[in-house]
Image (cartoon, rainbow, N blue to C red; front, side, top):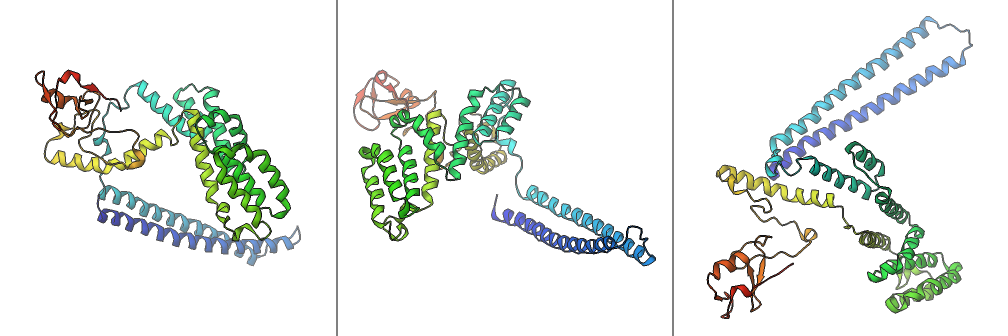
Length: 394
């Protein structure tokens, strides 16, 4: 994949957009003229008496109007066919400039068999539940023969209902959920409930001096319980009262009115709610697809190189890729150990081993270095027995 290929496809897309814009503009203008013409004819006929018979000139005018409509429809259909032809050229440009054999980078046995297909359908179904697409998930479950209990769908239904309310800046459902899960959130050291009450308090402050007494009462009722953990934040909230008569927007506390606070509370609620449900914040399906899209170009390149050099048999490892692919910090979920001796990443069959001196090498390296009952650490002069090495779990 190179820039020239992208430019070639982009050029075809520009042609489609240009042609579509011209056809759309022409169609709107012609249809508008025809509608005006038909409306005028209809108005003239409505003004005639019920027993009025069309004159010869009126019949000619009606026939001309019908012919004009027919010709316009035919012209629009022709333009649509031409546009379809132009769109098909985009697909041909993609096939011509990009490698489309993605199957060469995967194994056929990954999703083979009824159990694996059922598992894949379950993952897709759960993704739709997470996204709030309950109808689609239900249809998929029925078509795939999945059994979905109500207690499986209910957490996702409630989660999406609260998130939709937060998008509408309605804190009520989220506050009710936080109060119901207060003990679990406190054990998690969560700031969710305080942030929700903070936004509710700021909403009262934004109403001006007329709501000052309501804001004070709300602070005494709901914010006092968070003093031991959020004393500094509460002091800042109380400082807003000093600038209430002149407006908070020009005060040192204007940053508390920024819209980003709503996006932050949305993310905090999603994170804490998913933690309570035992779910990841991101959909596993989305993570896999994004990681696959990131790795796919590199896999296609290495596959092509291996085919050219006739070394495709190297790609036989079921749990290890032939090259290292950086998926970014966001897609790192556990520590990875690479043996400093053999320069290989540890696996279940070749785990990291801690020596008596504290240095860590892989089991394969340990077996090669400690062929006898004595092993000299490759990093320090300490001699030890290889059997004294201990397995490390990340």
